[in-house]
Length: 234
Image 1 (tube, rainbow, N blue to C red):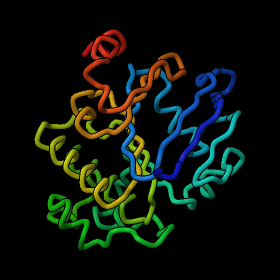
Image 2 (image 1 turned 180 degrees about the horizontal axis):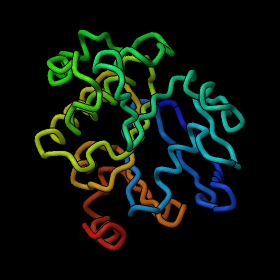
Image 3 (image 1 turned 180 degrees about the vertical axis):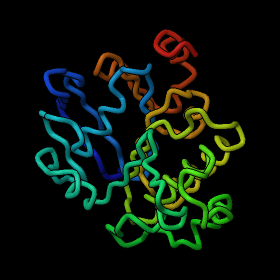
Image 4 (image 1 turned 60 degrees about the vertical axis):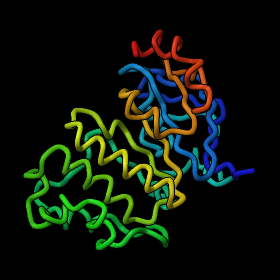
């Protein structure tokens, strides 16, 4: 049986006095691609930020590779082998494309080399000398993803990487997710674009009002279309 890489038990999360997550239980096995589906404001991004320690307060248990991390600061959590790709991408305008790529430290062995990343993302190779914010939205998203692939992180948290991008870029990102899966990465991704997530994920969790209201495997997808229509409108 595949080892459990990430485990959340009764996780609550707060921004100030606002109680956002209400007792989330979640398990992700090594090598899986897991999709968090739901409407905007459902708590999916907060769930990723809770794993990274980027909320004001957390309660409950968050275990990464069997080690409790709920009391650790974000930099310690990252060094456990987690790469976080936020929705806002975090590209630095004063740095070139390649400088942005090289900025994060190597946290584990096994990250992809710059040459390998340029082979996967030829767009950013062509734009490697361009200022980060001169890149198109799709190129910025490729750069944000490449940056964490270089770091050696083995668990990737991806927040809405397909949002607002041209179909050709979305297709390229889908191919990248498949490649990462083949290489043994574990991926937890927030997606509102169900059609992007559907052919990629092994497991699906629907989040509503800070709770996971339904969970099912890819093989059960067709039998849950009614539920998906109810919560997502697909």
